[in-house]
Each structure stands twice: as structure tokens, then as C-alpha cells.
Length: 148
Length: 74
Picture 1 (cartoon, rainbow over the protein chains, first blue to last red):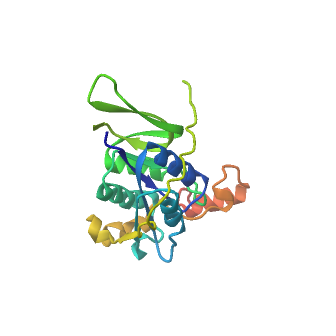
Picture 2: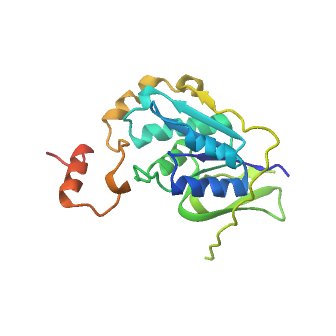
Picture 3: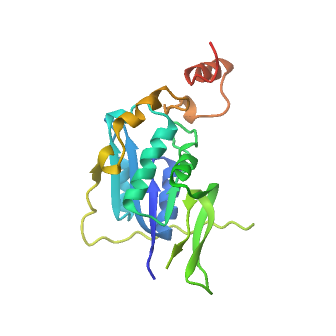
């Protein structure tokens, strides 16, 4: 069975990022991704790699300085597409900005259904078909079905 | 609906050092920097919030924040 490809979008660390990463590592193979304006730092990405994420991607660009959540989501969605995914997870809100807007905006940019303010995420393979249904009840997440 | 919390995944032993962080630029993702330029003038700009975005703020702080976000006319 092919493991789920999970992209976890990190927003600077904090308890919500931690929850999303934890859920992602329980689901499948994790790629973590983040976007920042300079100077930024890679601490959250390094920690995620140390905890078991298989790949880490980041964009650091001066044009990201002071942009709104929609612009941030546009870049994060592009990173998720670049990585390839079955599920995208992100924490409910970042520790400092706390708007909780980026996750839904990423789902919109990817044209995916989303579950918000969830506490846990499970994946269950459908017993009678070749498709898998995502049972989502956790982390802020965007989901889509995939074939196994 | 029953919600259960998944157990913490076990630490995965690595036989090799963690992979390097892959740095990408916007163009590699098909995004031109100029596409984002107007985003600095939009409501909902990302900026650290005092108190981690707490919903309960002193009135003056809330007004200051709404003015800054251009959600309130001066």
C-alpha cells in the first residue's frame, strides 16, 4: 500500500504547527513547507526533519514582506503543488499572527474541500473499493481523495 | 461524533542525517513577484499580534488594529 503523501504547512512554529506535524507523521510520508520574508529562520523546518519529515521546502523572498494572508496562501499552495500531496495539513493558527485565515485560503487556492478547527485526522482505506476515504476530524486540513 | 486523539507517532530512527532544506524561489513555483506586490495594500496583512491575536483586547488596541488593517475609517 502506497503511503499517503502529506504536506504540512508550517507557520513559524508553535503549538498549532506542532499538532499539524504530529498528525501528519501519523498519516504518512511528510513534506514540510514554509514561506517567509527575509531574514526568517529554518528552525521549524529543521525540527520537523529531525522528527521524521522526509522533505522540507521553503520560499524566502523579500516580496513576501508585509503581504496579506491571501498572498501567503497563494505561495504555500504552490509549494504544496510542487511537492505533490494527497493531504495538506496546517495548524489552526500561527502563534504570532493568529488570524487563522491561511489554511482556508490555501484550500481555496488548491480548490480542495477543507475541515477546520479539527482535533485529529485519520485515514481509513475503504474495505470495498480501490479508493480511500479521508476521515478528517483534526488539524486544519485540506483533503482530497486518492487512488491506492 | 466521537473524536479520539491519535497516539504520538514513534520517533523514526534515521540511518542517515536529515535531508537538506530545499530552497525554492517564486519563479520556480510559477509565481512572479510582481503578482504579490499589491498584496501589501490589502486588508489581512500578516503582522505579529500582541497577545497572540487574543480576541479580548482593550478598546483602544482594537481600534488601533482595525485602523491599521484599514477595516475602520479614521
